[in-house]
Amino acid sequence: MVAAREYRDWREASVRHLSAHSAQAKVEPQGRLVDRCGPEFEKARKAGLLIPLEPLVPASPEAVEEAEETIGYRIPSLLRRLYLEVANGGFGPRQGILGVRGGVADEWPDIVDVYRTFSSDPECTDPPGLIWILDWGCAIWSIVDCKGSEGQMWVAEEGELMPLDQTISDWLQMWLECRLTIPSVA
Image (cartoon, rainbow, N blue to C red; front, top):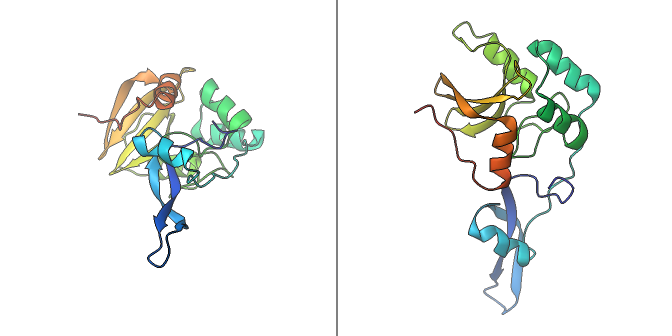
């Protein structure tokens, strides 16, 4: 999916419409978001309206090691390999997961910045070794536990934290199959 530049759910699609002054279709470069798992996506792809995503590049070994040093744990093997061999964030649900230093950023620069922010909060009681990788919005995050090699997934919602019955491998497989939904602590 990264090589094909179809590595995230939300894609921008051009809007094609008829001009008021002619019968020719006009394509606007600024579009709207379509969901990879929704019915409009395939229609937009077939019509050639999907705006191409930028190529992604892997993380440097130094950036991954720096993140692990800060977190105090090794990043689970699958996620580590993805960072080093596929892309430094930007792939996955919604607008994609956060990377390590130098990677694709969203509102947060990288997982280390998020880790430092939450772990330095005196009210934060998160167990050590958790990395916040995806902001779903509405104060909901998907989190990976680095203490085990499998990378158990957690959810944080409005300050509450709960482990999920899935690993990072399960989570990514569900995403690939369009079965991943926004997690909840409820």
